[in-house]
Length: 399
Image (tube, rainbow, N blue to C red; front, side, top):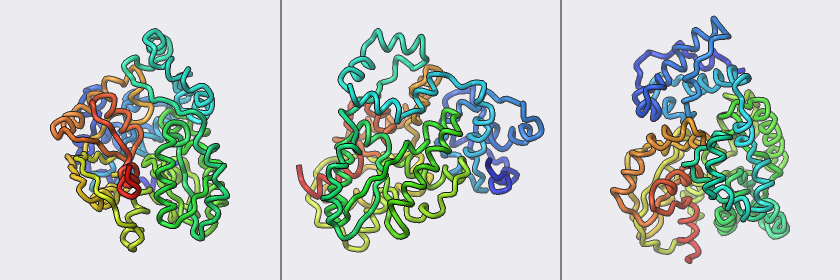
């Protein structure tokens, strides 16, 4: 359970800046905003545990309310915990399936061509919309063939030769969808003199938290903390290339799941923070020019960690890269949220401002640190979206 004294919802000064900054409240009157769903209604929920607030489900857990709160109230955490308390009677088979990324990914990567074809078939999409509740307007991501971690196991001896070591938390995206990004991360880290180890990790728990499966999320969190402690020892750095994974490992585990991560949290770095620290120490090699115009979109969870500055630092080091940074807006997808029939339009409406900003710049490429932001931007604009490490790898190795 969340320690309500630590959350201190009574510190809320009712300024409503969180509601003004909430991307969902901006596009639909069905959501009263984080102040109402969070601190205000929590007082009533404490007095009456049976009180159910249906508007809780509209929260995307983007954390933007917490970014702007002048009193540092953990508004989104309050809302998430309340959702978990009231989710038991509302859990759906769709939510079970969508939150089990390891289960779905392990199966789909065995027959990726079949699965990818099915999720793009009109009849299948119609059936998923009508019968399951997955929006037929959603563009499902394509699975890779096999898993990254299984393929990487063949390189363990090669990585063991490096004198300096670190642990890479790949996350579900690299493991099941984007092996190229994982390979780029490893290539870059190797070039800096680090051998890479990968644990027998499980999903970080973000989709489980979002869909109300708190006990399963806690189980995954305990497994990951133990696995990372064993692999990283006492002084080895842990890096993640997914901003949401990094946020979950460092913040959601203690604050939402009540899992002690104190042995590993100080050593966890989002990949661009680690690279920025290495660059500041003079450990980044000379970079080749990458003469493209790039729009950078800072993901919400990375912004909550204060990590976007590190990505910008790395991108600005690339010669001839013209970097454009529009005002930060939420993409709207928020993991599984935007794939659900009842929230798909809200997710698209939230992202419209961002899509317009990108179109106005007409870039050669869009850069973002978050896989679901990538999916959403590519689904609603004609632009290619890449991870910052992909651009850095191009500057380091060419191609």
